[in-house]
Length: 130
Image (cartoon, rainbow, N blue to C red):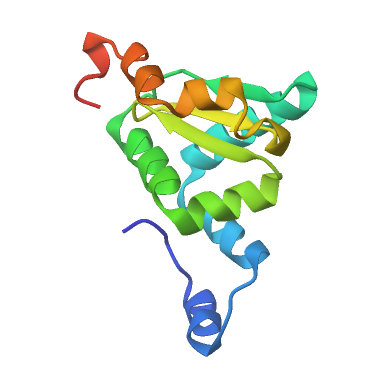
């Protein structure tokens, strides 16, 4: 299961729309490692004043890797995180998380990162089974 949904939040969802704040709170509580990584890369993006930041450190265990996969493979979760932090996320190799300022999306660095070539160049033998 991707998220630990409280009975109260499930009740809200059954009655209608869930706010981004409620959803993102559930993500933060359910996927703490993924939240930590995304928060860090978003903070790095804002603190640098640039248009790109990334996090390349492999997770300490498969549990944490699974959190990243669940967070970034879900359109709803990824979208909620992007709206919350105000930047676009990109993902490679089961652990490399990047944040792009919205103005950089579609630019050269973005295209290189999300391209098949970028994915291939970011491979290594120790990451093949991630």
